[in-house]
Amino acid sequence: MPVITLTTEWKSDDVYNGIIKGKLSSMCPGAIIIDNAGRIPAFNISHASFIIRNTYNNYPKGSVHIICVHSEAHENQDHLIVKAKDHFFIGTDNGIFNLILNSEPDEIVKLDHQGISDELEIFAKAASDILSGKNLSDLGTSVKTISERIPLRATIDKDVIIGSIIFIDSYGNAISNITREVFYRVFENKDYRILIQSNKNYTDQISQKYSDVPIGEMLARFNQFDLLEISINGADVSELLSLSVGSVVRIDLATKAASPNRLF
Image (cartoon, rainbow, N blue to C red; front, side, top):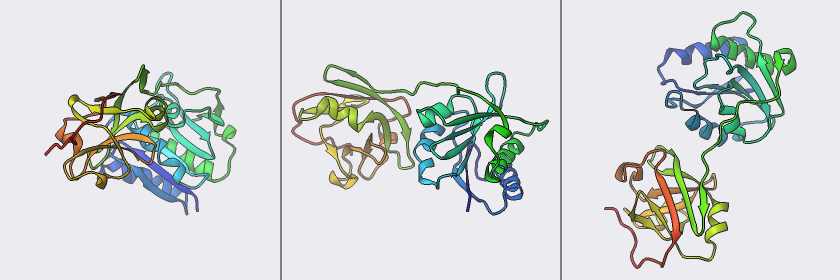
């Protein structure tokens, strides 16, 4: 059965949920409609792109992903269908497609609104047309490029990596933009410290799981996205250390510390 996912800024009781699900149910009978993520902070393209980038490939090939985040069209930001990696993405050309894919799409179409002004109607109709097997070129105007927004990447100096927190999950774990590959390229077979917020908050080892350290101890691990994650076993590290998106994570050379970094 065809799958349609929704990633939106809306609360669960927002009227827009019922509108778009009703339209999709009417226009795409038999399709499975899934809430991929809701309550994205309003207009936060980076937050939304992180979620979609790390979830879409878990859905079947041919799935349609509707993105209602900062999605109003205006000059130089058209509504698009983007086909890439055997998936279809419907949203607005505000830079989010570039952040999701980080590669060239297979096909891009600027949607022909055909006199429709309701954004949700436009997205639902596009999903219906895709699932009915229509060629994308019949749904609008083919275009060559999408708007680019440069992702925030960790920087490397001599024996130093400086990254930042890009996402905080429901448990308060702070996910950084430091990849496993970058970390081991710089610090393999070297002693290091991973510092967060200040020189007092650090760990000097990479854990495999949260329970590798005692309750209350800070840890660093590479998560399923191969990104360095800062956590506290049994607690919310973002709350205890006042972390937010943009907080700095620094890794440098160091002699192994004598005692673990316990926070409570």
